Amino acid sequence: QVQLVESGGGLVQAEESLTLSCAASGSGFSLGAMGWYRQAPGKQRELVAAITSGGNTDYKDSVKGRFTISRDNVKNTVYLQMNSLKPEDTAVYYCNAKGSTSGYIYWGQGTQVTVSS
Image (tube, rainbow, N blue to C red):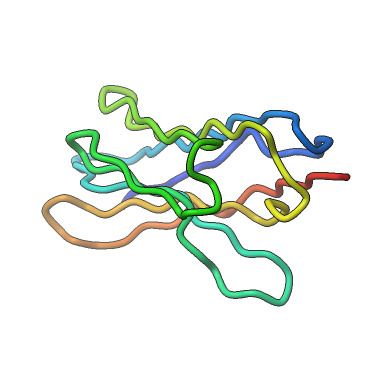
């Protein structure tokens, strides 16, 4: 069993920055792709950024150039550096990871990011 725990959310003003972290814990696991999703009130959960175990990344168009996803495979942690935040980035951000052998999808509990104008 793998647990994902996010941290780093909060309330910021527009154009400020935040860094989210997601640490995986458990025993005997190996993670493949990891990612960050977000869900705003009344909207569907959407993929924000993803990173493979080899470091290849992909981003939602609206965050390209502002957000950077990275991972530390030794610490089993994925990060999301968010710069130039906009009010429309306000959402609950969820960490996601896929077991590299099991294929099971794990989710964190979510962390709130609120950007005021």
